[in-house]
Length: 147
Figure 1: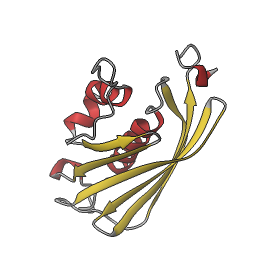
Figure 2: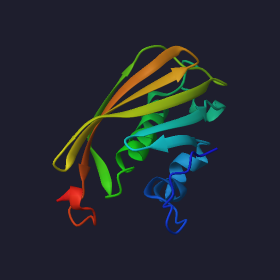
Figure 3: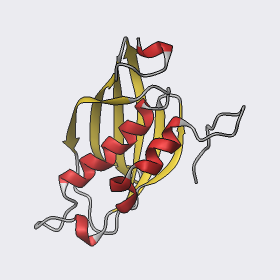
């Protein structure tokens, strides 16, 4: 259920779809790309039995990976290849096996080759985690904005 932002001129796959299709780790965890736009993305993931730790709550590493995937979709939406320069996460409340989580990413600012993105991971109306990612456009990317 992807809100397609494909190239209208040739029907080609856009940068977010291409990156997400190649993201084996996220797809194997059942992460779904629901929608995306310039500097934004919404993804969904269900916490599986393999994702819970010894306390029977979702392992923080999986929550980080989920938020990081939303971050990647948002910061790569502009076209040039963009990677994480750093990120941090605050765990607000536990998630449990069977929970359906949504990660909503939004761009806060872009400057030069950098950017800052906030991602909220939620279960319904309840915030599970808040993630902030700092991006960097790789040198040699084809977009004028990356120079």
